[in-house]
Image (cartoon, rainbow, N blue to C red; front, side, top):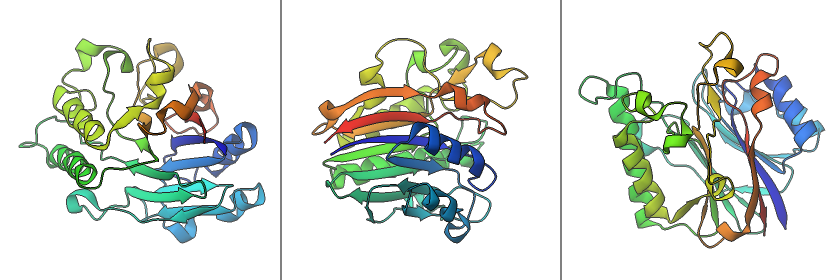
Length: 262
């Protein structure tokens, strides 16, 4: 059963309902994973998604912050969530499709502005969150699984607009990259996007601060699609829908896509 999956930090699913509907109508992914929904689950505009064929959802939410949801036009079973680093945040949910594929949807903490856990509690929380992800995948090594979401780290030199300038900027520091690599190794994860697009600058996020984000093009690849090694060969057709960053009232992230032939 081939299926196409997209992941998108939407930065408020209620505020940006029109562009979620636009994406679903124009691109038609079978599964859409959203992060930073900023909504209790019962306030997510599910009826609008239901009306265009997305009749299934698993989600975790909270008022005004965080929140993750998996919208699907395929049946999907809720298989739980984890509260990494005991933050009490809605940052993870997992669902299982009828073909047995488990989808983990993550919103890793951004980590604040100062890359020093002694000076910045949020940075420490981010590192702790990643450490607990690593330990979980060590203890319960995943199989036939996909991990997606806003991981808030751009790991490669060509995942940022200027590697040297961003080495001390949260999201691209060596300590964050090392933590993310440990998560990947622990779960046997493979970077689907970079398997398909192995070379070249590639971004999924552009700051709201830029007067002209497109012209400045100072992006970072913060949003990821990974798979376990047992299904990595089934993944293809990766892309980032850059145009969505320019839609009306956009998120500062663009959706990332991949297709799995399973």
